[in-house]
Amino acid sequence: MAFGAIRQNPNDLRPRVGIGVNLPLAEGTGFTSNYTTAEATKYNLINYFLTNPGERVGNPSFGGGLRAFIFEQINNQTTEYLKEDIQTKVTQEFPTVEIIELNVDEDPDANTVRVSLYYAIQDTNIEDEVILNFA
Image: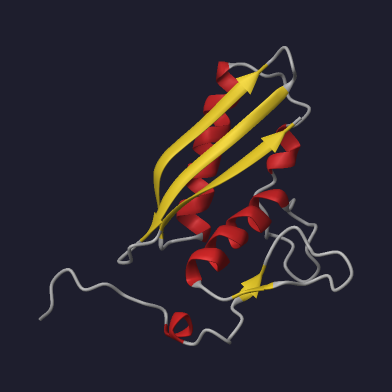
């Protein structure tokens, strides 16, 4: 039995096979493919959290709904709830993603919130971060 074996997605070994779509969508063509598991996971997280539940046709439960917090009062209670919400949704919807660090930084004077999610994909050497700014 091998211990400490690193899983690698078979699609990562085929550089011409697109796995997902980059965000934001490209002007003109609309879609730019990504070709690695690391890129696909990052853009899937961004897409998930910027989609509101009920917004996707055929899958009404899909979406993290972070934009719902834009008009909430910015305070410690709201940011703590937001952190718990993100943690729960990542655990449920992305079971192979482990959150290393999650920061929610607020600036009430500028009415902005910045979400920084540092994560790793289980059993791989992939670590990355997603930063979402809400103003």
